Image (cartoon, rainbow, N blue to C red; front, side, top):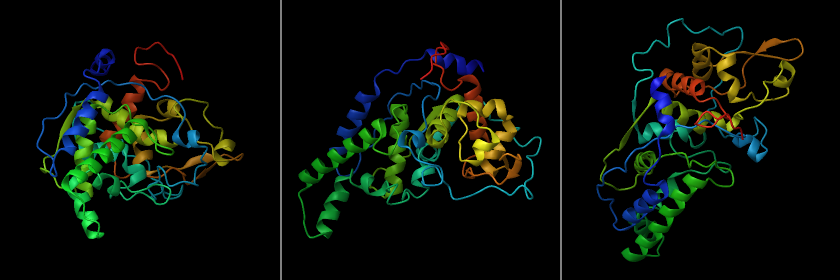
Length: 318
Protein backbone atom coordinates (compact mmCIF):
# COMPACT_ATOMS: atom_id res chain seq x y z
CA UNK A 1 0.00 0.00 0.00
CA UNK A 2 3.01 2.33 0.19
CA UNK A 3 2.56 3.32 -3.41
CA UNK A 4 -0.98 4.58 -2.75
CA UNK A 5 -0.08 6.58 0.36
CA UNK A 6 2.61 8.52 -1.48
CA UNK A 7 0.06 9.74 -4.02
CA UNK A 8 -1.96 11.64 -1.43
CA UNK A 9 0.33 14.67 -1.37
CA UNK A 10 0.69 15.23 -5.12
CA UNK A 11 -0.53 18.38 -6.84
CA UNK A 12 -1.68 18.90 -10.43
CA UNK A 13 0.57 21.44 -12.20
CA UNK A 14 -0.24 23.00 -14.59
CA UNK A 15 -4.00 23.13 -14.15
CA UNK A 16 -6.34 20.92 -16.14
CA UNK A 17 -8.23 23.96 -17.44
CA UNK A 18 -5.12 25.45 -19.06
CA UNK A 19 -4.12 22.20 -20.75
CA UNK A 20 -7.64 21.44 -21.97
CA UNK A 21 -7.94 24.96 -23.38
CA UNK A 22 -4.66 24.54 -25.23
CA UNK A 23 -5.83 21.20 -26.60
CA UNK A 24 -9.05 22.77 -27.89
CA UNK A 25 -7.14 25.52 -29.70
CA UNK A 26 -4.63 23.13 -31.26
CA UNK A 27 -7.34 20.85 -32.65
CA UNK A 28 -9.25 23.69 -34.29
CA UNK A 29 -6.31 25.03 -36.34
CA UNK A 30 -6.24 22.34 -39.04
CA UNK A 31 -8.46 19.75 -40.66
CA UNK A 32 -6.24 16.84 -39.63
CA UNK A 33 -4.99 16.85 -36.07
CA UNK A 34 -1.22 17.41 -35.86
CA UNK A 35 0.99 15.10 -33.86
CA UNK A 36 1.55 16.57 -30.41
CA UNK A 37 3.14 15.47 -27.16
CA UNK A 38 0.83 14.37 -24.36
CA UNK A 39 0.38 16.80 -21.44
CA UNK A 40 2.34 15.99 -18.29
CA UNK A 41 0.69 13.30 -16.18
CA UNK A 42 0.33 14.11 -12.48
CA UNK A 43 -2.43 11.93 -11.03
CA UNK A 44 -3.99 12.69 -7.69
CA UNK A 45 -6.05 9.94 -6.11
CA UNK A 46 -9.06 10.95 -4.01
CA UNK A 47 -11.94 9.05 -2.40
CA UNK A 48 -15.32 8.73 -4.05
CA UNK A 49 -17.83 11.02 -2.34
CA UNK A 50 -21.46 12.02 -2.41
CA UNK A 51 -24.67 10.65 -3.91
CA UNK A 52 -24.84 8.42 -6.97
CA UNK A 53 -25.95 9.74 -10.32
CA UNK A 54 -29.22 7.86 -9.80
CA UNK A 55 -29.70 9.62 -6.47
CA UNK A 56 -28.80 13.00 -7.94
CA UNK A 57 -31.38 12.61 -10.70
CA UNK A 58 -34.04 10.87 -8.60
CA UNK A 59 -33.93 7.78 -10.81
CA UNK A 60 -35.22 4.42 -9.62
CA UNK A 61 -33.16 1.35 -10.48
CA UNK A 62 -34.62 -0.49 -13.47
CA UNK A 63 -36.10 2.64 -15.03
CA UNK A 64 -32.87 3.78 -16.68
CA UNK A 65 -30.29 2.39 -19.09
CA UNK A 66 -27.48 4.19 -17.26
CA UNK A 67 -24.95 1.73 -15.90
CA UNK A 68 -26.76 -1.26 -17.39
CA UNK A 69 -24.90 -3.77 -19.53
CA UNK A 70 -27.99 -5.86 -20.23
CA UNK A 71 -26.14 -8.93 -18.92
CA UNK A 72 -27.40 -10.50 -15.69
CA UNK A 73 -25.95 -12.92 -13.19
CA UNK A 74 -26.87 -16.55 -12.53
CA UNK A 75 -29.86 -17.85 -10.63
CA UNK A 76 -29.19 -19.19 -7.11
CA UNK A 77 -29.49 -22.73 -8.48
CA UNK A 78 -26.83 -22.21 -11.15
CA UNK A 79 -24.43 -20.04 -9.16
CA UNK A 80 -20.87 -21.27 -8.74
CA UNK A 81 -18.54 -19.62 -6.24
CA UNK A 82 -15.23 -18.15 -7.50
CA UNK A 83 -12.15 -20.39 -7.62
CA UNK A 84 -9.89 -19.84 -4.63
CA UNK A 85 -6.93 -18.54 -6.67
CA UNK A 86 -8.65 -16.75 -9.54
CA UNK A 87 -7.38 -13.30 -8.48
CA UNK A 88 -3.74 -14.38 -8.07
CA UNK A 89 -2.20 -11.92 -10.54
CA UNK A 90 1.42 -11.01 -11.13
CA UNK A 91 0.47 -7.47 -12.17
CA UNK A 92 -2.05 -6.48 -9.49
CA UNK A 93 -0.79 -3.49 -7.53
CA UNK A 94 1.77 -2.49 -10.14
CA UNK A 95 1.52 0.62 -12.32
CA UNK A 96 -0.68 0.10 -15.37
CA UNK A 97 -0.36 1.60 -18.84
CA UNK A 98 -3.86 2.67 -19.88
CA UNK A 99 -4.87 3.51 -23.41
CA UNK A 100 -7.69 5.89 -24.25
CA UNK A 101 -9.84 2.86 -25.00
CA UNK A 102 -9.27 1.47 -21.53
CA UNK A 103 -10.10 4.82 -19.92
CA UNK A 104 -13.30 4.84 -21.97
CA UNK A 105 -14.13 1.32 -20.82
CA UNK A 106 -13.61 2.19 -17.15
CA UNK A 107 -15.36 5.57 -17.27
CA UNK A 108 -17.83 5.71 -20.16
CA UNK A 109 -18.86 2.31 -21.51
CA UNK A 110 -21.40 1.55 -18.78
CA UNK A 111 -23.65 4.24 -20.25
CA UNK A 112 -22.43 4.95 -23.79
CA UNK A 113 -21.77 1.27 -24.68
CA UNK A 114 -18.74 -0.16 -26.43
CA UNK A 115 -19.63 1.37 -29.80
CA UNK A 116 -20.33 4.84 -28.40
CA UNK A 117 -23.96 4.81 -29.52
CA UNK A 118 -25.45 4.96 -26.00
CA UNK A 119 -29.11 4.17 -25.45
CA UNK A 120 -31.16 6.90 -27.18
CA UNK A 121 -33.17 8.87 -26.36
CA UNK A 122 -32.07 8.72 -22.72
CA UNK A 123 -28.35 8.37 -23.39
CA UNK A 124 -27.23 10.03 -26.63
CA UNK A 125 -24.41 8.72 -28.76
CA UNK A 126 -20.97 10.27 -28.44
CA UNK A 127 -20.23 9.75 -32.15
CA UNK A 128 -21.93 12.90 -33.48
CA UNK A 129 -20.48 15.34 -30.91
CA UNK A 130 -16.99 13.93 -31.46
CA UNK A 131 -17.29 14.13 -35.25
CA UNK A 132 -18.36 17.75 -34.87
CA UNK A 133 -14.92 18.55 -33.40
CA UNK A 134 -13.30 17.81 -36.77
CA UNK A 135 -13.24 20.64 -39.31
CA UNK A 136 -12.86 18.13 -42.14
CA UNK A 137 -15.91 16.24 -40.95
CA UNK A 138 -17.92 19.46 -40.73
CA UNK A 139 -16.96 20.45 -44.28
CA UNK A 140 -17.94 17.05 -45.66
CA UNK A 141 -21.21 16.92 -43.71
CA UNK A 142 -22.35 20.36 -44.81
CA UNK A 143 -21.40 19.63 -48.42
CA UNK A 144 -23.40 16.39 -48.35
CA UNK A 145 -26.40 18.33 -47.06
CA UNK A 146 -26.15 20.79 -49.91
CA UNK A 147 -24.82 23.65 -47.79
CA UNK A 148 -21.07 23.85 -48.44
CA UNK A 149 -19.04 26.00 -46.06
CA UNK A 150 -15.54 27.43 -46.15
CA UNK A 151 -12.60 25.76 -44.44
CA UNK A 152 -12.30 28.74 -42.10
CA UNK A 153 -15.93 28.47 -41.01
CA UNK A 154 -15.55 24.71 -40.57
CA UNK A 155 -12.60 25.31 -38.25
CA UNK A 156 -14.64 27.81 -36.27
CA UNK A 157 -17.50 25.34 -35.86
CA UNK A 158 -15.10 22.54 -34.89
CA UNK A 159 -13.42 24.77 -32.31
CA UNK A 160 -16.76 25.52 -30.65
CA UNK A 161 -17.69 21.84 -30.65
CA UNK A 162 -14.36 20.92 -29.09
CA UNK A 163 -14.88 23.42 -26.28
CA UNK A 164 -18.37 22.05 -25.70
CA UNK A 165 -17.05 18.48 -25.52
CA UNK A 166 -14.32 19.38 -23.04
CA UNK A 167 -16.77 21.36 -20.92
CA UNK A 168 -19.20 18.43 -20.87
CA UNK A 169 -16.43 16.08 -19.73
CA UNK A 170 -15.34 18.46 -16.99
CA UNK A 171 -18.72 19.70 -15.74
CA UNK A 172 -21.17 17.01 -16.81
CA UNK A 173 -24.66 17.78 -18.07
CA UNK A 174 -28.28 17.45 -17.12
CA UNK A 175 -27.97 13.67 -16.75
CA UNK A 176 -24.29 13.03 -17.36
CA UNK A 177 -22.09 13.24 -14.23
CA UNK A 178 -18.99 15.43 -14.20
CA UNK A 179 -15.60 13.86 -14.93
CA UNK A 180 -13.56 16.75 -13.58
CA UNK A 181 -11.32 14.29 -11.73
CA UNK A 182 -9.75 13.11 -15.00
CA UNK A 183 -6.21 14.41 -15.49
CA UNK A 184 -5.13 16.31 -18.63
CA UNK A 185 -3.20 13.24 -19.83
CA UNK A 186 -6.24 11.01 -19.31
CA UNK A 187 -8.45 13.46 -21.24
CA UNK A 188 -5.81 13.58 -23.98
CA UNK A 189 -5.78 9.79 -24.34
CA UNK A 190 -9.57 9.52 -24.06
CA UNK A 191 -10.22 12.07 -26.80
CA UNK A 192 -7.76 10.28 -29.06
CA UNK A 193 -9.80 7.11 -28.61
CA UNK A 194 -13.11 8.93 -29.12
CA UNK A 195 -11.73 10.27 -32.42
CA UNK A 196 -10.93 6.73 -33.50
CA UNK A 197 -14.34 5.45 -32.37
CA UNK A 198 -16.08 8.19 -34.33
CA UNK A 199 -13.89 7.81 -37.43
CA UNK A 200 -12.41 11.30 -37.13
CA UNK A 201 -9.35 11.83 -39.36
CA UNK A 202 -6.09 12.22 -37.49
CA UNK A 203 -2.52 11.07 -37.20
CA UNK A 204 -3.65 7.68 -35.89
CA UNK A 205 -1.32 7.81 -32.90
CA UNK A 206 -2.75 6.25 -29.74
CA UNK A 207 -1.79 8.00 -26.51
CA UNK A 208 -1.35 6.11 -23.26
CA UNK A 209 -0.90 7.12 -19.65
CA UNK A 210 0.87 5.22 -16.88
CA UNK A 211 -1.31 4.97 -13.78
CA UNK A 212 -0.76 3.55 -10.30
CA UNK A 213 -3.06 0.68 -9.41
CA UNK A 214 -5.09 2.94 -7.09
CA UNK A 215 -5.88 5.29 -9.96
CA UNK A 216 -7.16 2.44 -12.12
CA UNK A 217 -9.49 1.46 -9.27
CA UNK A 218 -10.57 5.07 -8.80
CA UNK A 219 -11.54 5.46 -12.46
CA UNK A 220 -13.66 2.32 -12.27
CA UNK A 221 -15.38 3.25 -9.00
CA UNK A 222 -16.10 6.85 -9.97
CA UNK A 223 -16.90 6.16 -13.62
CA UNK A 224 -19.02 3.01 -13.21
CA UNK A 225 -19.94 2.08 -9.61
CA UNK A 226 -20.94 5.61 -8.63
CA UNK A 227 -23.61 5.71 -11.34
CA UNK A 228 -25.93 3.59 -9.16
CA UNK A 229 -24.27 3.40 -5.74
CA UNK A 230 -24.00 6.27 -3.24
CA UNK A 231 -20.53 6.65 -1.74
CA UNK A 232 -21.70 6.22 1.86
CA UNK A 233 -24.82 5.32 3.79
CA UNK A 234 -26.42 2.45 5.71
CA UNK A 235 -26.34 -1.05 4.28
CA UNK A 236 -29.89 -2.10 3.27
CA UNK A 237 -31.72 -4.85 5.12
CA UNK A 238 -33.02 -7.88 3.16
CA UNK A 239 -36.47 -6.23 3.12
CA UNK A 240 -35.01 -2.97 1.77
CA UNK A 241 -33.10 -4.91 -0.91
CA UNK A 242 -36.38 -6.45 -2.03
CA UNK A 243 -37.92 -2.97 -2.25
CA UNK A 244 -35.12 -1.79 -4.55
CA UNK A 245 -32.55 -0.21 -2.22
CA UNK A 246 -29.02 0.02 -3.60
CA UNK A 247 -26.12 -0.57 -1.18
CA UNK A 248 -23.42 2.09 -0.69
CA UNK A 249 -19.88 1.76 -2.03
CA UNK A 250 -18.54 2.14 1.52
CA UNK A 251 -19.81 -1.32 2.40
CA UNK A 252 -18.23 -3.18 -0.51
CA UNK A 253 -14.97 -4.07 1.23
CA UNK A 254 -16.54 -4.88 4.62
CA UNK A 255 -19.27 -7.07 3.15
CA UNK A 256 -17.26 -8.82 0.45
CA UNK A 257 -13.80 -10.37 0.24
CA UNK A 258 -11.71 -9.33 -2.73
CA UNK A 259 -12.46 -12.55 -4.70
CA UNK A 260 -16.17 -12.27 -3.87
CA UNK A 261 -16.38 -8.68 -5.15
CA UNK A 262 -14.46 -9.42 -8.33
CA UNK A 263 -16.72 -12.41 -9.02
CA UNK A 264 -19.87 -10.42 -8.24
CA UNK A 265 -18.92 -7.61 -10.63
CA UNK A 266 -17.70 -9.80 -13.50
CA UNK A 267 -19.99 -12.84 -13.24
CA UNK A 268 -22.83 -11.96 -10.87
CA UNK A 269 -23.96 -13.53 -7.61
CA UNK A 270 -27.28 -14.16 -5.83
CA UNK A 271 -28.48 -11.74 -3.15
CA UNK A 272 -30.50 -12.41 0.01
CA UNK A 273 -33.75 -10.43 -0.02
CA UNK A 274 -37.14 -10.23 1.65
CA UNK A 275 -38.47 -11.02 5.12
CA UNK A 276 -37.77 -14.73 4.61
CA UNK A 277 -34.17 -13.92 3.62
CA UNK A 278 -34.19 -16.12 0.55
CA UNK A 279 -31.63 -16.03 -2.24
CA UNK A 280 -32.68 -14.36 -5.48
CA UNK A 281 -30.95 -13.66 -8.74
CA UNK A 282 -29.00 -10.43 -8.29
CA UNK A 283 -30.36 -7.29 -9.94
CA UNK A 284 -26.92 -5.80 -10.52
CA UNK A 285 -25.75 -6.00 -14.16
CA UNK A 286 -22.69 -8.11 -14.94
CA UNK A 287 -19.67 -6.14 -16.16
CA UNK A 288 -17.98 -8.89 -18.10
CA UNK A 289 -15.95 -6.42 -20.14
CA UNK A 290 -13.86 -5.54 -17.07
CA UNK A 291 -10.81 -7.56 -16.07
CA UNK A 292 -10.18 -9.29 -12.74
CA UNK A 293 -7.26 -6.96 -12.06
CA UNK A 294 -9.31 -3.82 -12.74
CA UNK A 295 -12.02 -4.84 -10.28
CA UNK A 296 -9.37 -5.96 -7.77
CA UNK A 297 -7.71 -2.55 -8.15
CA UNK A 298 -11.06 -0.96 -7.29
CA UNK A 299 -11.22 -3.07 -4.13
CA UNK A 300 -7.70 -2.05 -3.07
CA UNK A 301 -8.49 1.60 -3.89
CA UNK A 302 -11.54 1.49 -1.60
CA UNK A 303 -9.47 -0.09 1.16
CA UNK A 304 -6.83 2.64 0.86
CA UNK A 305 -9.18 5.57 0.24
CA UNK A 306 -12.43 4.86 2.13
CA UNK A 307 -15.46 6.52 0.50
CA UNK A 308 -16.35 9.91 1.91
CA UNK A 309 -12.94 10.58 3.46
CA UNK A 310 -10.60 13.26 2.16
CA UNK A 311 -7.31 12.35 0.53
CA UNK A 312 -5.36 13.67 3.55
CA UNK A 313 -7.17 11.26 5.88
CA UNK A 314 -9.00 14.00 7.79
CA UNK A 315 -12.20 11.99 7.67
CA UNK A 316 -14.36 14.84 6.36
CA UNK A 317 -17.53 13.59 4.71
CA UNK A 318 -19.74 15.12 2.06
